[in-house]
Image (cartoon, rainbow, N blue to C red; front, side):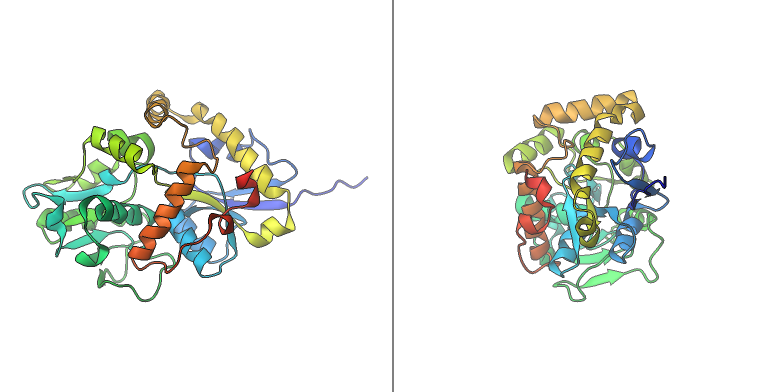
Amino acid sequence: MATTQKPRITLGTPAEPRNRALIDGLVQLDGYELEHIGKYSPGEFHYRFVQGEYDVCEMSAATFLRTKEKGRRFVAIPVFFQRGPRQRNIFYCEGKLKHPSELKGKQIGCFRYGATAVSWARGFLLDECGIKTTDVGWFVSGREVFIPNELPVKVERIDPPPPFGQEKDQLAELVSQGALGAALVPGDSGFRGIFGGGSVPAQMGKFPGVRPLFEDTEEIVRWVKRSGIYPIIHLMTMKEETAERYPDLPAKLIEAFRESARRATKYMTADEVAGYKKERDVLGEDPYAYTLGETEKRSMRSLNRYQIEQGLMKKELPLESLFVREAFN
């Protein structure tokens, strides 16, 4: 008797503790064969997915919103790998800035104008420091992923841009020299975004005086609690045609990712386990429970609002148009 071959689903995402059990096969995607592609940087995965590769892919939350506004047939599942405040990702040079308000009229650098981390950092500067996107000039060191052709600000760019994942060094050097008033960079999500540490301060600190503009852990925690926002950086998305071809797939994907997350400690160091516990304790909830709760809804709406202010989007999108219907169960 012939064996029925399972449908093959391609998954594009870097391996990390919360998806490793699924990638390694310890967690199965019931009824499907999963083909994992993991050889690219996050930015390149986002770019490739927008170009039509993969059934399911980890994607920049900001890019996802922009593609939806333009009618691209993608849909999200409530799986959020990278989250956390972006205050520590705003870097300046000691002695060249006394107060964040002094950034008005200066040039700020970023690795991509449309990157999610950059949109969140600009949103923070807007809400908490009164700095509008149009109050400063912009310098971009890397390659964009799906942004409008016209922006409300002048953007200076490196041409040709460096490869994906190699965009930070020049920003740090220009901040150190005073050519840039600040730089907004990616990395160090989760508990490191709240409490500090991680790889980004060392990477940006290769040049004299470069350090985070906002480092007060208590103030960062107060902002999270006051705003009710816990930024979403990356989320899992899929092609709508894949969801339509396999109607049971979205629910099975959600459950598979949840089960994989439950096994994440197998792939974490003791410090990471302790750090993520500290993050949960501070927040009073698990930001990686893969549910579309009130914090997640508020965060997605805020990111939408910020991108409108930044000239990256024109309208607010209803949440029901963004996520699979199983996200609302």
